[in-house]
Amino acid sequence: MNLRKGLHWLSACRHGGVSLRSAGLERLVKDILRAVSVPARLQVTGLFQEGQQRPADVFVPAGALGLYQSRDAIMDVTLTNPTSGAAISNGSHRSSLSAALKAESNKRSHFRAAAQRSGGVWSHSAFVPLAFETTGAMGPSMQELFLHLVKVWTEINDDCPSAPGLLGTDFAWSSMTFRDLWLQKFSFFLAKTSAVAVEDAASAARRGTLRGAPHYG
Image (cartoon, rainbow, N blue to C red; front, side, top):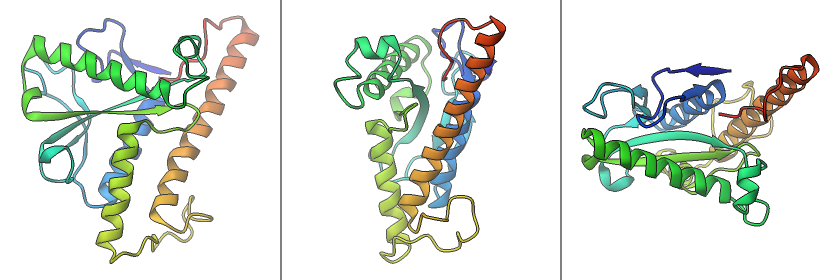
């Protein structure tokens, strides 16, 4: 399912939207940030002067995170399929994370071009593309953020990596640390939504309405 022409669409794109899978990943990124008391917000508009068509998926104010030279962080969450024809043609079957790296590069290029056209707060902020592959891998920028948050959690909790108060929650049955808990949350979300995407594509194929590959966001 795609939310056509919602808040999240690139200024340069006529057919953009935000998939429910991408929206779910945005919420998870916001939640892990808030778990270490970082005041993250979703879909913050007004980043460009021309209209409000290019918000931040996740916005972190300057100084709240300890990364990106203490600038405001404009985080753009993206999901890419490393098994697609385009990804394989770019070598995803030979090099790990090549699909995520390509997605990050594309996001930076699109955002830079939109910023040059529109003005706004780009020059004062850090643009951070957070790429995930549908097979579960995190891109380099997301890995950097994730490891930083694990470090922050450990420092806040006096070098204790465990995640207290999680007994009885959906992900606590085998995740005894903050790191494992959030790796499972992201992994389970991607696995469950991938299964739904495949099931939807199979249903469409049986009805004769399938057009192209399943949409992953």
